[in-house]
Amino acid sequence: MTELTATMPGHALILAGSRPGGDPFAHEQGVAHKALIEIDGMTMLARVHAALSAAGYACVHVSADDPAVVEEAARLGATVVAPAAGPSGSVARVFALTGAPLLVTTADHALLRPEWVRDFLADAPAADVAILLAERGKVDAAVPGTRRTWLRFADGDWSGCNLFLLAGDGARRALEVWSGVEADRKRPWRIVRRLGIGTMFSYAMGRLSLAEAVRRLGQRNGLSAAVVPARDGEAAIDVDKAEDLTLARRLLAQRGDAA
Image (cartoon, rainbow, N blue to C red; front, side):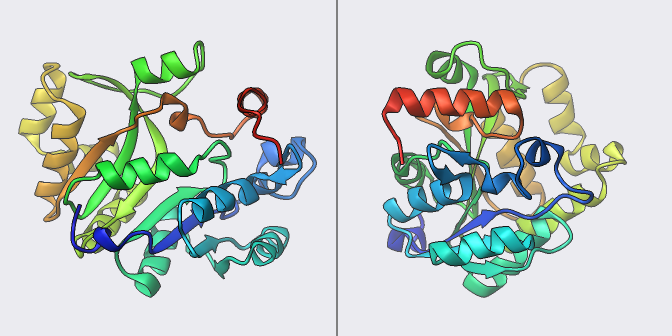
C-alpha cells in the first residue's frame, strides 16, 4: 500500500447518475432510478452506503442528479455532488474535492460487503490506480451459472467488480485517459492505439495476462496501474437487469442479510 492508502479509509464515492432518457430497468421496477430499487426493505443505494460505512468510511459522496436519489442520499448522510457528462467526469469532479485516496463504486453494487472493501485495500499494491476484478473460476464457484461479461486474457477470463481505488497523484492522468476512452467509444481504433502495437500483438497471440495489460496501459499513459484479484467471486455481481435482481435477492436471503 502507498503512504496515502496507509491512512485508509478516507473518502468514498458512489456513482448514481441518471441515464439520458431514463433507465428501462428502473421503470420496470416502478422507481425513478435503479439506485432506489428495494431489496429486503433497503434501497440499493442504502445497501452500498451501509457497506462502505461498515468498512470505516465516514465521508461518502454520492454522484446523483435525480431528485429522489438526491433525497435518499441526503437521508443517508452522504454528500451529494452533481454528476458530470460521463462517469469519468463525475469521478474527476469528486476527486478534485477529495484528492487521493478515493474509493469508487456504483449504486447497483447491492451485494457489496465491508470485507470486500477491506480486502481490496489490503491487497492493493503501491499504484496510482487499482482495480478489483474477479477470475472466472472464483465467480463460478461463488455463483454457479451466472452470466457475466468476461475479459479474456492469457491468465483466464475476468469480470469487473465495480471497485476502484484512486491512490496516487497519477490518478488524475488515469481519469483523463478514461475520459478519452469514453469520447472514443465509437472509434475503437483510437482506443486500441492507446495500448500500443506490442501490447496488442501479445494479446492477439494469447500471451498477455490481465495484470500485464493494465500495467502496460498505465505505463504508456504515465501512471502506475494494478489489478487486484477478488477473493470472493460474488463481488462481480451487480444489479442492472431483472435477472440480476432476482439473483441478488436469492444470495442475500442465503446470507441471512435482511434489513
